[in-house]
Length: 98
Image (cartoon, rainbow, N blue to C red; front, side, top):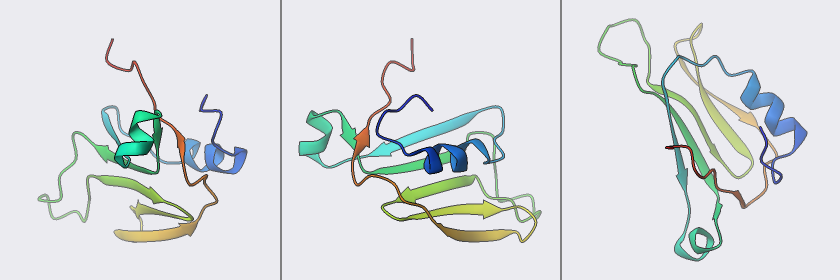
């Protein structure tokens, strides 16, 4: 939420995602952007999740690329896309494994 490249709209969407206790955050970038500490895609996974339990649960919580965010809707037990205006490149999150 402290990322200076994220819009207030994007921050609000991220804050509203129902998150479990343990989450894997994966940032994807091309080589040039990576060297500039920038990413262009974000994936949030439930580190404790499984889709084996027949409850329709998925470990994919959220996937974002450009103007579309995809999240797992627990009520519908399937994925939904939402329009989301994110920058094409945004600052990578560093120093989280201290």
